[in-house]
Amino acid sequence: MKEFLFSRRNQLIVYILIIFIAPFIMCKYYLQPTIAKISELSFHLDGFEIKTIPAISGVLLLIILCLIIKRINLFQILSMLFILLIIAIGQYVSDFYMGNPFYDIQSNWHYVAYTIFSYLMYRYLSYSKIVPAKIILYTYITAMLISTADEFFQLSMTNRVFDPGDIAKDILGAVIGLILIFFVIENGKMIQNGWNFRQKKFSGYFKNPSSLLLLELILTIIFLCFSSVLTEKNVRINAVFISVAVFGIVSLLFHFFKYKVVKFILLFLVICQLVSFGIFCRKNIIYNSQSLTIYKGIPIPYFDVMFFENGFFRLVDKKTFFQLPDLVRIKSYTNDILLLGSGETGKGGGGLAKKEEMQFIVNEVKQKPLQVLILKNKEAFLMFNKLKEQNKRVVFILHHE
Image 1 (cartoon, rainbow, N blue to C red):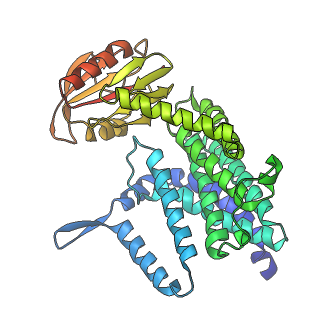
Image 2 (image 1 turned 60 degrees about the vertical axis):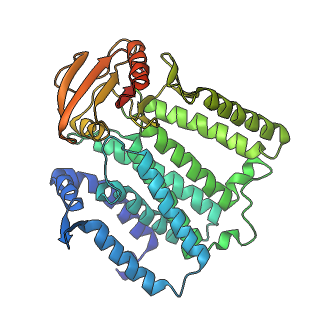
Image 3 (image 1 turned 90 degrees about the horizontal axis):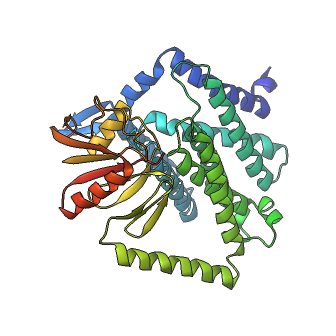
């Protein structure tokens, strides 16, 4: 019985079952709203409101750091900071409209759960004398399969959808776990002979653990970026195709970067973009079509995009209808005017109480009135340029059908 309970393989199998069962339990017993409330718990200290979860996490991290400070070196500390950077990037690119804080339990569950999974996979595979490169590959593929199957499993539940973004977060958690294992716990033992990221042959990337782990990290972040802005049912599959295509291009450029012609082409493209931005940086949208928008000389293909009042922009979820949390998030960035580009034929821009070209609503976040304009893209980008020329404070969300 003892051998059964402490078997590395059995512990791994049990944990995989827990990953599958957890979403069902959370939905069945309505734990998701409870977890959301726990994330928002706070207390007051000397007149300052302090969130409970980050405060407890900070104290625990401080205690752990005090216990291990004499056992870790600078390389391990930098590796842990790199992991925190990866998590920060993941949270920045995903779930923008949800507006979850960095300490949100549900957002970080993916990273924690699959970091533990990577460790259990490592224990089992290393005990079976599997080499590091194969451990990294098997862990990544298994995490992707488990997460994908889990998303299909959740389709049988009420109010659950197949979300590629959750898959991306899960496999990013697995990659974080692998970095933690090989760079912190093992203190970078697998790179003791050098990093050697670029290999002579493509097959070498599957044999060198550091190269393989780097490519997995790049692929996962690319997939997370695109799966977070293509969540609607009719465009989800595009997130996969676009991610694979972009990753293929990045991988080829990385592999052939040693050749001068590739360096010259990349340098030429960078210079062209800088020149284009330099010429049009004082302009706004200079071109718009169904598949391309050029803003201040920067091309933005296919995706929906949100232009902020300060002139910055970011890709946002491609959707025709805004849910209540989406509108709350949008209003938090908007002071005076909200302009919605409803697409080439006007299918987008839904979610408000009325879908009128011009209306005034209450911005509950800013506690002030808000003017809303809903126009087809051709009229919308012209209106945006006009309002910006008049120095109006306007937030513009452009939807491409």
